[in-house]
Amino acid sequence: MTPARRRRASATVMQRSYARAERMLPWHVATMVLGMPSEPKWMAGGTSFWYWTQDRSQRRFFKVDTRTGSRQPLFDHRRLAQALTSNGVDASAATALRLERVRFPDREPGVMRFDLDGSTWTCDLGTYASSGDRAPERPTGVPSPDGSLVAFVRGGNVWIHDVRRGHERPLTRDGSRVYGYGATEGFGQPQPPVLAWSPDGKRLVALRIDRRGLRQFHLIRSVRGDGGARPLLHTYPYVLPGVDRVQAAEDGRVRWRAPSPRFCPSSRGGAAGASGSTSCGTAAALTERSSGRWTRTPERLST
Image (cartoon, rainbow, N blue to C red; front, side, top):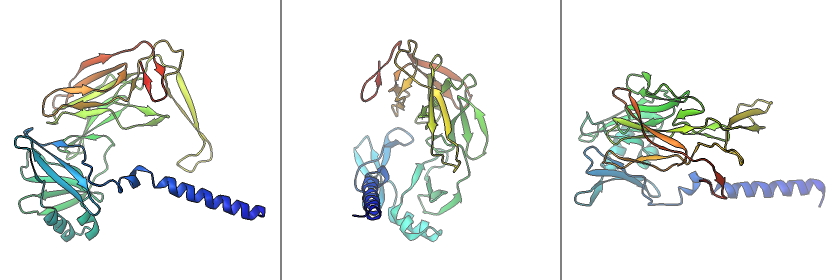
């Protein structure tokens, strides 16, 4: 085999290997696993919740009454698909009903809001009259249960973005990059904030991560996403063997136990949970965990 043919054969094998690996990426695997329920979302009153499942052609939404154990469709899928189609949504997209950020505003009974195809939609579940507006630009964060507020992290502090008014205000003011609220970093890149809304949307729990005293870790990114030629330097606090004082959170997540007012942190290492009232803008410490030393196991960091 000539060198040229050998190079072409090697390139073909590599392309097939990448194509085979690509089929295992989450967004492809998700289309192969059907019928799995989504994470349930509590509805107002705390006696019912809703979730969705995916079949080969459509996402189906269900409502469960916890008092009777009965299940029924959350809405009329056919009527909603027809309403979307009549409002200019592509027929295939309307039938698939891949709705995102579904919420039911407390002050508007019988109304459902959701995101679809880059627009925010409002649907009257009595008449199925629907209207959609292009979703405005807003910071990446965690939306409240009714979608009216978005909590996000800026400069180590938690901020609240009012979707309807477009206003922003800080919920905390004493955070910093090395001792901030809700902010995490992975390989020098920002990660989704560790924030959790209460079921009624009146309180917010943020995991405050203490990285004070940690040594800096450096990474060089050779391939830039903006097309630049020079490598990028990422520097961030990181746990290394031999560091005596370590207070960092690993796998920091908090979950509210709806419909009760309690929450449960599932973090390891040193982290403090802070609860903030979104109405008056006050914050208070709820719990704190700390550890003097960390060890690395093959799967995760553990105390």
